[in-house]
Length: 242
Ligand code: SF4
Figure 1 (cartoon, rainbow, N blue to C red):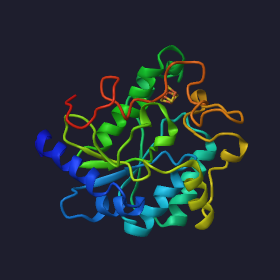
Figure 2: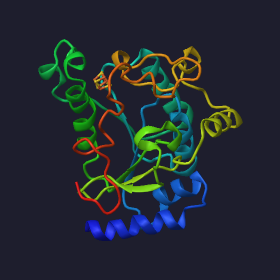
Figure 3: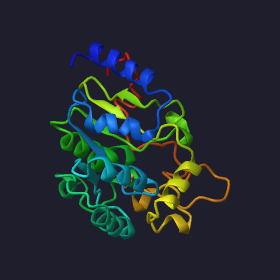
């Protein structure tokens, strides 16, 4: 779809779904005839179970892309397997970098150049995994702050014409907790050990009471996103081209 047409469509969807619940937004993404082919991209992290559960209820055959950077916590890998089985997700795709062994044989690139490491282990593998899809669904939320503070339900990824859907954009931390409790869903085991946001081992640390939810990601550096939600280092908004 031409970018101008997609921009118009995305703006219309944001307007139409402005006051709708997350499940209605997700249902549109997964079932509307004109929505195209969408995948859920999940880290199987601290809050991931919410969207994974919603997807399992609405359409459990939805492709779920899980980026295994080969630097993840063992708890994440176990949680991924357990959740997949428990929720009956039938199409979870575990994606790894094809050239990590050659480009970063001792897994130390994150120390020298974390952006290059994320590009190697996350951004490029994700773009490859999304080949053939018209869009993807993310679990980002406004309360995460930073570049996410003004997030809409629907947005444009970049000039490729892919749509990104953020059904939980307006959820609060309490909404996440309530949904998990009401549906008796298992939380990632590291949450109770002080990790409200979970990524790779070298780039994730626990947070203290009162700290920002993502304060433990790339702690001590200016980096705050892995790059899968950015093109050329900046967010792409409706009406812009990459
Ligand atoms: S989060 Fe850290 S270890 Fe993981 S891919 Fe990015 S830089 Fe590498």
